[in-house]
Length: 495
Image 1 (cartoon, helix red, strand yellow):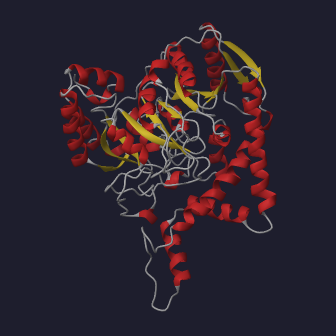
Image 2 (image 1 turned 60 degrees about the horizontal axis):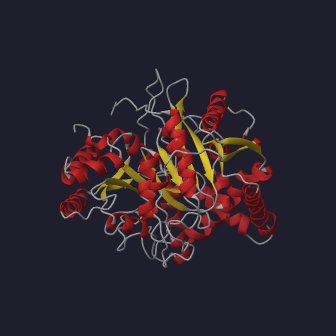
Image 3 (image 1 turned 60 degrees about the vertical axis):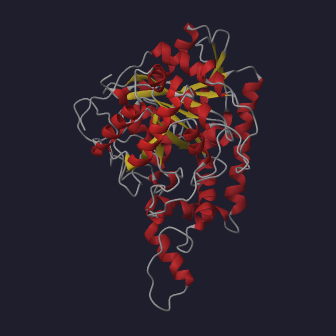
């Protein structure tokens, strides 16, 4: 097989188990693809020695007939996940040269399943961004190009490196994290599948925290089946994470029948936002039609508090970020600023944070500190938490009425050019999350599946929102859309 990095996980699994593909050869092919991908800036570090050792171990397991689903499968790991002994900076200068002496629970599960770590992937600093332009490594670049335009496009954020690496066939799959849409938005921008599981389905232990009540790890892959395979390996109870759910993990791949007959799919009227591009509206209608043709019923539903989701999110997430990032003080680990003799500890804190944090992180820390401060806590943070409860109740009401899943657009537009939003009000960038933040606020599972191209040849995605803990059914509905849409477009290789 000439294009080994272009394989899906499912196809590579079959080839590895049959002996048609060698695990070491597959790993070497992905390492070579990654080394040649410098213009994409997807990787922050390649872990060639680790990958080769894992590939040899996977080959031995395959030869012995002990081959889990991910045995020998090369993956990329978002820089937010701690990998033992590998520099893990969360895209920030304040964690420069931090090599954790421990493994995150999610990556430990992946290695136990035989997966191979090709390297760490670029991301927005501390996962704060929607375009991967806040990274200390510089922006990741999408492998896609607009027709007739050679400007670099954003792969989305914050899991932009993961999206670029999967869409560019550098790895077979990648991990991402989703706090307000950071898996689903970049997946939609790059024509891949991204899954944000129910909050608590995957352990957060060993993942650098942004907003602890919203963060959730998930897979980014080339197909719904691949995402299901990865999620099965990543998910599970972890006693080291107090928010981890002690629930059995279904066989998500086994649930992919594509049969959605009799399912009731909600179409929320509040997601028809003012100024929605006609192409997004048409894609949404086409997605609903695909499901109806497959035997599902579409039902107009109301989620009345959706209009308050973005402002509530951008109070709650910065508040939690300001608390989580207080630990970066220049004393225990990471960057330590140089201070003059006689300067006190306060000066050390100030200079370390001023030098180590980027502009977007500083902005969110200041917002978060403000909304938690005396005199403003009730007016902002407490009120936002009450709105969050109402948003969650909206979904509970709809699901109680027999709705099996909800269909929405994944993003309000196709990918934009790097630097195109640089001079815009930051709120304009935050609007990229308009269709995704409600899912995080309510703790629900959501998946983005590619379903078409815009007029300039860029991918567009649809989002399926599932019931809590029912990722299997959500993925099956996404699988039906994937089959009906027949999305097979790939970016032309220019790097």
